Amino acid sequence: MMDGLTLDLDQATNGWGNVCHCWTILITRLEIQVKSTNLYATQTGYGSSHPFPVPVICSLTEAKNRSLLSDVYRRKMVKEASETMTLETVRNSLNEQENTIIYSLIDRANYPLNPKMYDESASLIPGFDGSLVKFMVMETEAVHAKCGRYENPEELPFFPGNLPSSLVPSQEYPNILHLTASSINMNESIWDFYFQKLLPLISAPGEDGNYAKCAASDLNCLQALSRRIHYGKFVAEIKFIETPRDYEPEIRSQNSSSLMKLLTFEDVEETVKRRVEKKAAVYGQRVSLVEAEPGQKPKIDPAVISRLYDEWVMPLTKKVEVEYLLGRLD
Ligand SMILES: O=C(O)C(=O)C[C@]1(C(=O)O)C=C[C@@H](O)C=C1
Image (cartoon, rainbow, N blue to C red; front, side, top):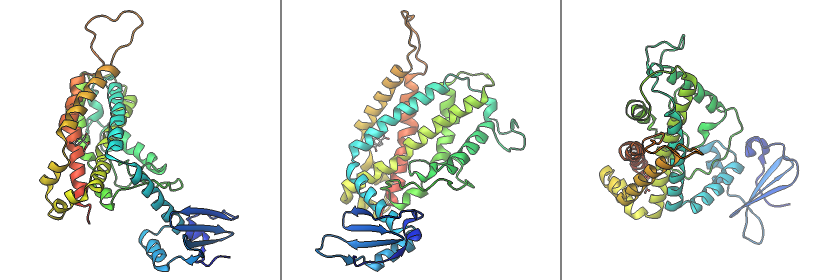
């Protein structure tokens, strides 16, 4: 029997209380054992077992109100995630996310503008004070919240007020971000540019009344754009971790414009603009088994996608990066 600290299993394992046989996880320097209804934590690496230092357990429990087990496990995942994430891997993720954005916009371009859907005073939903699209987004976000969507640090709601809590068992996301990340939400700006600037550029004027599908398509576009832009938090974290000495003085002096300069790579931005334009041309092709008529237009104007990135997506991503860095040492 090892030396150790005995904790109530339910409290310690956050409801993983049905474990009834010996179960061991080895986490770098810590060995956690769950036996029957007790959890034992010891430091490993010494010939014999040593008690886990009580102050650490207390501070974790108090600070996070989470179990020792899941907290240590979370730290392990964070460590692994931050070891595997590099500027190259986060840029690869941004590259992948372009595909989702472009496909979603191509889908939205299948419908006309449908302006009535966005009219706050059209009263399309009895008893709801707002547009149909707002209703669709709010209701969908409520269902997604119940299914745990916003527990994921990559996902942010457009209407965060009064969202229901998650009903599903808590999922441990390998969140490498500093706590300041949770206070950054640019969705209001995304909502504004999407409806006011972008939508008129990708959809033809007119109404087809296909509101449910069209609003669902809007939501897909909004979510894809939001995820991409807020991914700037991860990009900023990696940049900070890779060269903290460059960033620390500017963060301490809260110098936003210097931070902006430090994190800007104009050559990368040019590559992104050219790449998304090319992707839009390829993904938006009309495929036919007979010879295509000459001069057929793609489903979406590739120049609009390049402009989307130039004027809105990349500037907002950088704004997220700056905001994140400003709070990175808090
Ligand atoms: O790749 C980076 O370094 C990023 O910060 C991402 C990003 C972008 O939004 O695509 C933003 C700023 C840089 O100037 C280049 C590209």
